[in-house]
Image 1 (cartoon, chains in turn red, cyan):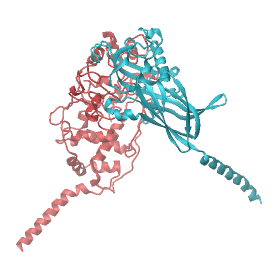
Image 2 (cartoon, each protein chain N blue to C red):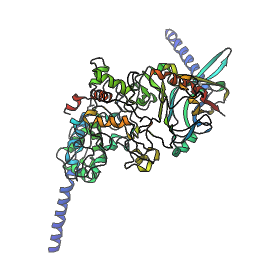
Image 3 (cartoon, chains in turn blue, yellow):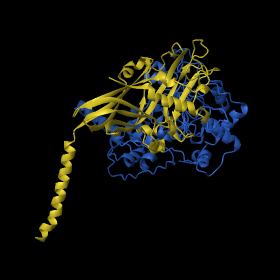
Image 4 (cartoon, rainbow over the protein chains, first blue to last red):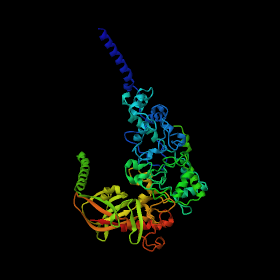
Length: 358
Length: 275
C-alpha cells in the first residue's frame, strides 16, 4: 500500500512537472486579436519594383515582430547578441569591423553586409549568394557557430514560453496556439523587417538627379568618371558593377583583390564555394554603394580601411588572379581624380535613413 | 411581338460571336522556338577557353568571360507580291551564351527561347533584331519586375539612356607572357554595345514550312569571331580588317561609338541558320 501511495505521488508530481513544462509551449492564443494590416512600404521613384513572397506579405504586426526579434539578444545562445550587433542602423545596417565577432569572441571570415535595400537583392544573399531569399537567410546567423551560436531547437521553446512573443506571433501570423511558433515564422518576421529597410531616395545623388540639388565640381567630375559620361575624364569603370539605382547590379565578380594563380588558390572561394564551379572561385557579390561612406572597412574580408585604399586597389588594376573580371584594369587616375570619385561617393550617403529610428 | 424585336439583335450578336469562335478554333497553328548557340571559328564557344583572336591574322591568345545579347522584333517573313508580310515570333528576349567548359552540356544544347504560335504554312525566312527595339529602349529597368529580361540593371547604361544590347568581355594576352593579367597591365576588353542607332536587323532567307500543330525549333548559330571584324582604318591599325583590341578595349564613349556600331552590325554577318 505504501508502495502504491509512493507511486501515485510520483505520478502526480511527474504529471505536474510535465504540465508545468508543456503548458506555456502549448497555449491557446485564439482569444488574442489578429487583425493584419498591410505595412505601407515607400519605394523611391526609379527603384526596382518591390517583390514580396506570396506566403509572407508585409504587415505592420509582422514588421514589428521582426524588429523585436532583430534587436533581441534572445537570438543568441548566451543572450548577449542579436542581429543588430553586426547590422547597426547608424552604420547603414553593418558594423565597423573588418570581420564580425560572434558570441564566443571568434571572428567570422567575412565582413557584415549592409542590409540597406536588401529587399531588392534578387540573385542570392550573403557575399557568396548562398541564400535564395531573405526568409532563408534569416535562419542562418542564429545557428552559425561564429555568430549567434544558438540552436533553433532551443530558441523556439524560449519564444513559445516568452511573456510577449506568443501574442506578437499571433498578431503577425494568426497562429492559434503557441505550439505553432517555429523558426520559419521567426525568419519570416525578420525578413519582413529587413525587407522594409529601404533608402528614402533623398541622398544628394538622388536630389541632383531629381533637379533639386547640384553637384560640386569635384562631385560632378567623380560622377563623370564613375559612369564614364564624357571623354573629359578617364573611365573609372565603377558603374558596370555598381549601376543605378541601387549602385549594385546584383552580380558576382572577382575584382582582383586576391592574387591567385589558379582557382584553387583562393583562401575564400566565395560564390565558387556554393556552386562548386572552378570559374566561380574568388567571386563575391558586388555590394551596393549607397551609404558606402558609412560602411568601412571594405571588401568581403574588410581588408581596406578607407575608400582611398579601395580606389588605390582599382587604380592599380587589382592583382593577377584567376577568374578576374575583365572590368578590372589599370585606371590611370590621378590623386585628384581619386579624391573626386570619393567626393561623388559621399553623395550616396542617406543620413536621413541612418538617423531614422525604426 | 415587341419582345421578339428585342430578341432579334441579341440573336444576331450570338451568331456573330459564334462565327468568331469558329474562326479561332479553325486557325491552324504551329509553335516556333529559337535556339541559339555560339562557335568561335567553327569550334564550340566556351567562356574561359583560350582561342586565337583570328588564327593566322592575329594570333593573340584570347579568352572570354561574357557573351550575351538581346534579341527583339523577331518574325517570320512571307513574300507577298512585292512586299514581305511579317508574323511576329517574339518582341524581346535575352540570350546569354556565357557557358564555361564545366557547362558543356548547356553549351551543347544552346539556349532555346519559346516563340509564339503562328499560322502553319510556308514562310520565306526569318528576321531577327539584335538589341532592344527603340520603343522598348525608351523604358528602363525600374519599370519591370525582376523576372522580366528588361529589368537587368547590369544591361542598362544611363549615360546612353539605353539598354546595353550586347556584352562581349574577356582578356587578351597582349604581351604574350602566357598570363591573362589586369594588374598594371591592360589586357581586359569590355565591349558593351547599345543605343538605338546600333539596333541591327538581319533577315535570313530560307524556306521554313510549318505543319499544323508542329513544334519547330529554328537553330541559329553565332560565330563570335566575326564580331571583331573592322574595316574602319582608325580602329584597325594593323590593317588586317580586325578591331585593334589592344588599343580599343572598350566601347563607352562617343569616340568609341563607331566600334559599338560596327560590332552590333557584325551580328548580322555572324548569325547563320542551321539545318
